[in-house]
Amino acid sequence: MSAQPAGAAAAVPAPDAAAARPPARWWRLARRLLAAAMAVLVAGFLVPEPGRIPVEGATPRDWNPRSFWHEPWGASGVHQGIDIFAPHGRPVVSPVPGIVLFQGQLPMGGNVVGVLGPKWRVHYHAHLADGAAPPRFVAAGTRIGAVGSTGNAAGKPPHLHYAVVSLLPLPWRYRPVTQGWKRMFFVDPAEAMQVQR
View 1 (cartoon, rainbow, N blue to C red):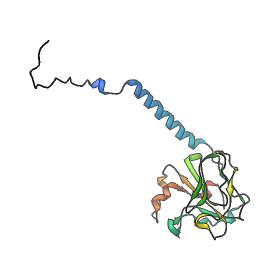
View 2 (view 1 turned 180 degrees about the vertical axis):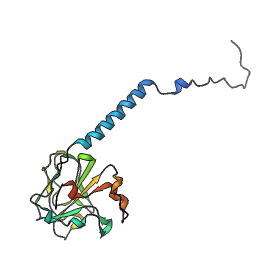
View 3 (view 1 turned 60 degrees about the vertical axis):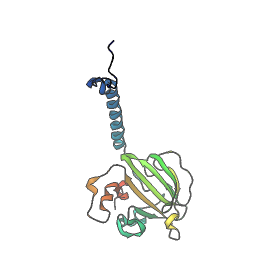
View 4 (view 1 turned 30 degrees about the horizontal axis):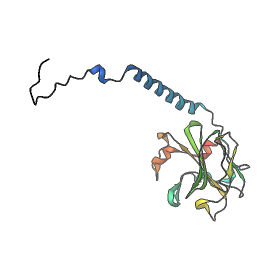
């Protein structure tokens, strides 16, 4: 055994390039996880979206089709949905099958319910009269609340504010208008409901 001179640094072996790479099983796991994530993403687009009007008994005459992305509109600047007018307490139903992501109160929306449906779209229902918790998984037509005037709709005629938000950007929806870049994330509710005027 050779003695090392005092004060001399110990020799550090050069790192082995193969040892610095993650093991092959890590790459296999990463590929499997990526494939699973892509399968879930694609499956969300393959699920049919049997849209329907989310207020029982409502017809296209119960909202103004030009109110989507209308400006000026209060604190938000533009109206990112439509207002479906109906008598107070009329049932609000899920327009699509999905998962209830949120049920609670928001300052502007009052009592709200958000349902994640097909095509990775969140169907947002606001100003509900009641805060009754809907089931976690809903079929199209399941009652999720009732028409009301909570939040910033207080004192106004009862209605449902209904918006459809895409979790994935839709660049072709961009318009050179106020907040036009946000339109990449919003779908006209009439399109989601498959309503013909």
